[in-house]
Amino acid sequence: HLHGRALDWTILCPSRLVDDPGTGKVKCSLIHGEDDLRNSLTDKEKEAALRVMPGSHDGKNQRLCISRDNTAAILVGLLGRDNTIGKSVTVIDGIIPVVEALSMV
Image (cartoon, rainbow, N blue to C red):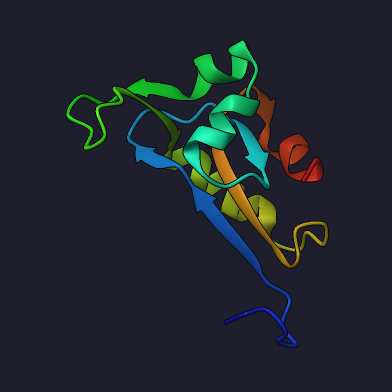
């Protein structure tokens, strides 16, 4: 419902939220869908974001995740940022500092 409106908006799409301590390092992407995003990651990015999640409905035991701390840091980092306006940004734990990752969107 935001498309075509006279508003500046950004939609944040965090992956699975976890209670792990934040690292201040994330991956921001315009790719949506866990499988597509996972296939675009380097081995180091996968290592930072994948967590074992037993009992998943589709039988996959590893999921892309982001800590609640990192999600909060991204929300703060989005304030006043023009390069994300009009975009839906998927975020996961990663290897790049939040400010740098947001500038790459």
